Image (cartoon, rainbow, N blue to C red; front, side, top):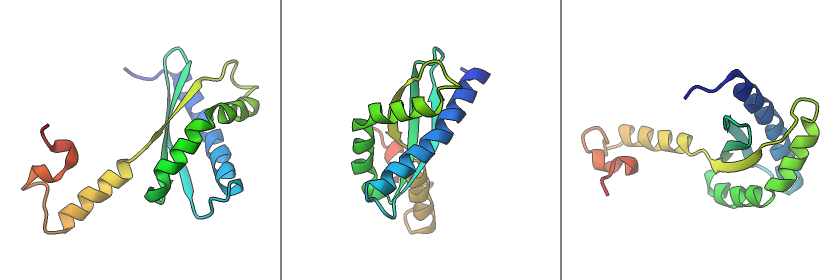
Length: 131
């Protein structure tokens, strides 16, 4: 189903402000050399839930960071509400997910350049394996 203009506008406002909040929190928390990028925000039709997809570099710190972000979701939501109080009446609940699409693309690229070719042997790709 296609997102409405209102959903897209709210998602872009949330995305822009979340980048600032998360980067600031990471640097203040002593996480130097960590890059947090908000790759996508999607909002439900009733504007009550916002799904936030984060790309975290380096990948080995992603699990630790996403757990910290999820545990501080209420603080992040409050900070976001303060920033957008003139634009939004109600702040959606935020759900955070790791966006691993770049890692997946990188694995495919490595496979194509290496000796293991997933085109000739589809069992090499995790998502293609039959369970």
